[in-house]
Amino acid sequence: MSYILWTVALNSSGLALCRWLWGDATETDENPTLLSAFSAQQLPVFLLANVLTGVVNMTVDTLIMPDWLARVLVCAYGMAVAGVALWMTSGATMQGHVATK
Image (cartoon, rainbow, N blue to C red; front, side, top):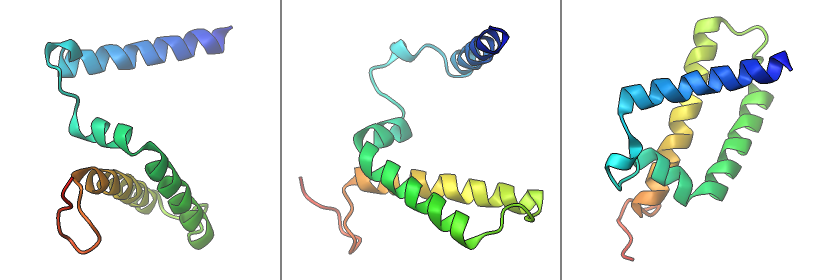
């Protein structure tokens, strides 16, 4: 029971902090760009994240990695997944041209 209360309290405080920082989400009808990108490309982004996780697990010995390098790796991983989601949503093709819809 204490775990459930702790989880609810932690998530509620996180949501309150987000609301305090970014205001009421109902003020505008537009979602943040990154949120829209993830929402529009859920399956490909999920598959990419799983493949990248496997690549990292197979190539990097994370147990002996220094803390600063692990943080760099996690940031690069997050930026790669977010960048691909934004790229896929933008309508760009592999040749760098913008696809017409």
